[in-house]
Length: 618
Image 1 (cartoon, rainbow, N blue to C red):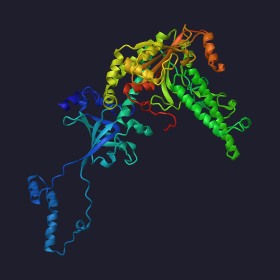
Image 2 (cartoon, rainbow, N blue to C red):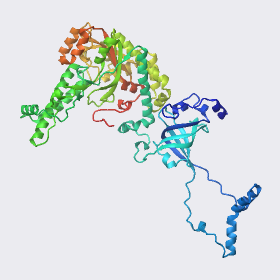
Image 3 (tube, rainbow, N blue to C red):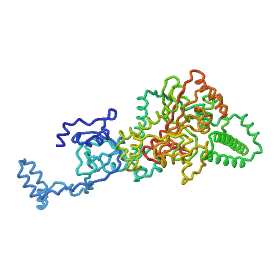
Image 4 (tube, rainbow, N blue to C red):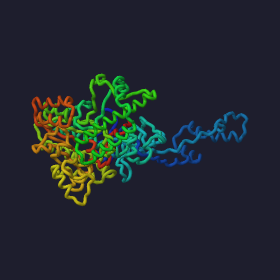
């Protein structure tokens, strides 16, 4: 019956560009591939696990008399009969001792050949990365040596016939190989995945191999689905995709730790260097280093404490100046001992861009230029924070989805963010079911239920002031940071609201102006700004958004108040001088969205090639 069904079934679908059948099309079909039984296909992939099964030994030949009886019973020629009796004739001649016996006895004098290895079958569990399931491939030892095929990680390309797997195991179909077209061998002793079940933190040291593990492969397929769903959502809602620059001259938030870019490494302005060294004569390097340590501790405390963004910005600026002073003192010490000096004092006019540039921390300011001309726009790409914080929710390079909408206010941005978030959750449930089942089994047993809840429930919306009052009314919970109006809500505060109190996403809006970027629109009370955060269980702040300040006098006052370099923002102020419009937008931290979907605990495991402080391997 299986063969008859296969004859009527559609042929297996080959990949257009690699001349092979992708395993997902076989293993995730409605019947598990049974409709393709009997078809000849080519598949390629990597061995995930394997075993060698020895074949039953071949029965010995029957005695010569019996063989002769068989020969007599057949219609055979005289030549065939003589050939079958040559050993017998040779024995008779030797017994008679005839001197005329001239047949050389080379058969008896040649050393016996080593017996070939017993026949066996290599049973290989093969994956090509397209799905969670593996295809069992059977390769006879007469086709390829099992020693080449069995090691984990071996790459194979084989041609064979699909057949129904015997028994009631997890495999519905299997492939009986008839040709091996390619073998990519593995050095078992040096291949890191030869060991079973390496923990995720160890896998980070092998970024080139970790997608071959089932866990990382599933996470990356989910990440890819989220990326596709992002573009689909904004296309369906008439947004245009705009690529914003990675290199910028502007601090898009006003208080960020930014990566400085230079093309003049080792090129020193000698006059400036000498002048700087002269001004720091008599200053103890140890004293300055001690001060540097204190200032670093202050910055870390401010990040965790109730202090506002303005205080943090001042502390960061002071820390940068102290770092520069330490570098100059180090250079002076090297001069004393005849060591060559390479400082970061350079002539800016000689830089590649003739000015100081940085890796961008946000693309929203640049998006405003296009929102004020094209309407609704979005960007999707990497953003960079030179933050040394060792956090499971932060990496130096993280991907962001940023949107900007003309003719919109804060409430419009909140509604768009909520719809987009629900769309991503629903898309994964409907299009990544096999991967989500694996994630539920291996990583987080509640991940599917959590996503279903997100798609069906409403979000809690509270103001910053209301959030403070809710947290203050929990006497049994003691927070590290005092709950006073104006403090930055910490990860501890936000997690408690989403995980313990409301047990669903919480949207907090109308923050104090001191804790949000300079470009956020000031509310009528003069104290709060039109900004919001979407806080979700397990992850914390996933989306941050705001209505941008469109009034020229108000944003100019904010730039002056925060002592930001006015010349960096002249192009941005032009948008308020010429054709100003109310507009709003938000940023979704894409890597944290992957974290939320999968239940992983460290964002580095959700990023293909993570970059964090002190680690940029591969």
